[in-house]
Image (tube, rainbow, N blue to C red; front, side):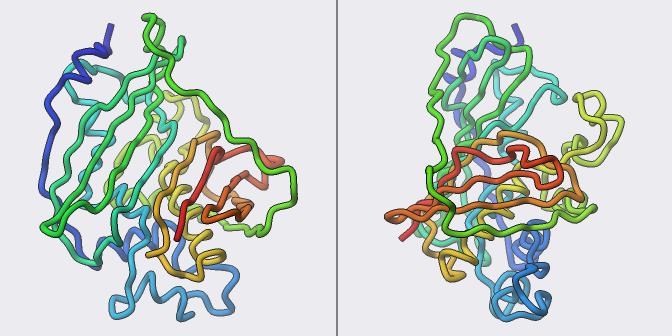
Length: 290
């Protein structure tokens, strides 16, 4: 069997020193739609958008943690002892980030990654890859990526948590739409996720798609930016944690409909694809904030 759960969990954590500066932050922000907010009259020069794109005013969207240092711990985790899988069978099933403090515009940190859990879903396995980053001042963030590996389940292991978060029965407090550029995946992958699934039509076909799909983490970033801009007054420092389950794919050129429900320091979010009759994209999505 390609996945040896016990061996993967027992493997020594991997540590690496990562670094980033304003150029990495700006590129990431452009990759998740900064400077193209349709709610602004002139989004490329609007003061609220310049906080994402102009180095003299820059702040860091917390989801940048998923690409900081271009380390791509998610892909690196697939080379952990006990794991030997075909990349074409791997999909990002979910992502959680806990922020310990705001991410600086320029920084260096030690990133430590390990396999925190392996679950048996029957026809698939789910790997939970945990990455913790800290600099000289202490912890910065903890990130959990849930990777869905098709065809690798069925060994009788723990199925893991399966609770689902139902959308509130009332109308959302806010709804926004965000257009995904036709070249969005090509731009986003420059932040370090080189999986050919998002650029190569032939590879996409091997994975079961008729054309390349958008990175789930790109949708993740687009969604958090929408929440920060519309609910949190543009203040990225208010984000405490952000969790989602990737419920469906997004194709470049589509439009995301982002619905938000506010309640006691948290925003519950639902994201769907407008052009495919509201097909689900992100589910079980919550932003905890101050």
